[in-house]
Amino acid sequence: MPEKKIIQNSLFQLWKAIVKKASEMRSDNKTVIMIICLLISTLFWFAKALNDEYNTEVAFPIEFTNVPDNYSLYGNLPDELIITIEDVGVKILRYKFSFVFSSLKFDVSKHFEQNKNKDKNGSIDLGRAALIKGIEKELLSNTKIVNIYPDNIEISYSRLQEKMLPVKVMADITTVQQHIVSGNIITRPDSVLVIGSAVQLAEIDGVYTQPVKAHNLDDTLSHNVSLQAVEGLKYDRKRVKLIIPVETFTEKLVEVPVVGRGFPDSLQIRTFPGVASVSCICGLSVYNRVHPHNFVCYINYEDIQHRNNGQTEINVESNSKYAQRVMLRTSMVDYLIEKVD
Image (cartoon, rainbow, N blue to C red; front, top):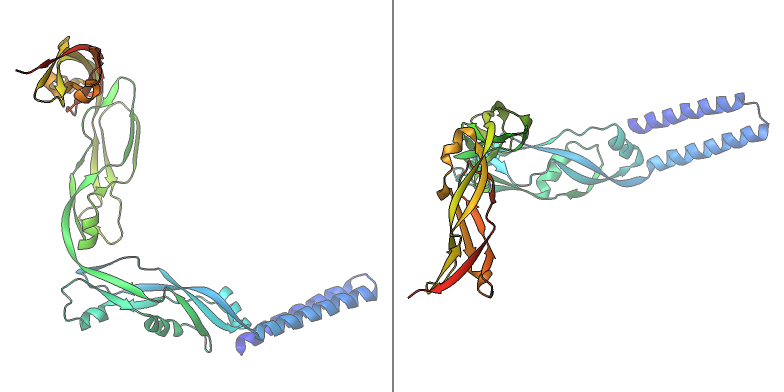
């Protein structure tokens, strides 16, 4: 075959060059003869080996083309097939070093044209026979296909749907001293229209931005940021405006009543003092939006029901989006449990 002759001619030319070089060496005749004999043996062995049959694995690209506009494919669709082939050594070398496969293209639209229920979701089964038929067109003559992995591909398809999903920010933010992020990080718009299969849309709860790093901020940052692409999904926009509110902070101190939590109806608790001091920091612009009712100071019944002493720690919770670094200035109180008449 042409490939075999090309390789054999190349080996012959290489052998001639080596023999010529060896004859030019200033050495004794025995050494030269031994080198020539070794080369001749090697070349004959290699030429014989090219005529023997071997098995090898090669990667075969696969593409799924002509997907109808109103549909999308999903699932673990492979980018390539791993096929085990058998042929003589000269062809194996060509597959390994000089032969580039064209992609096996599977025309999805042909299935839809034959499918009477094309308005419904479903799947296409691409079996071993269909794969072999496509692969054989790209192989040299007489090459045998021993194995294919995967040998069956299930192509799931779904009619495209639309869904509004919130934008979720991925950000690493730091501020300079005496400054804080003084509110929620927002995007404009705060949601985007996502187009995709019902299966994919059901699996996601938002669209993420590309990671943003913003360090040593001393003022509000306004910045356009790209959305992270997800294979199989389309957005009505590629970028959103990111706003990170930053301002100087101040400390605020409030007095909050101490209450019991989890107590049975037959019991009530009194504390001494009856209020706890709570401190927090907040932006100057929202200082007047932080109130005592934004905090709850409480004692858990479970924490004291087995105690004999009359002193315990207080817990605190905040429901204010403006209050940060919430701390108790009053950490311990005396208490008295009374029965309710």
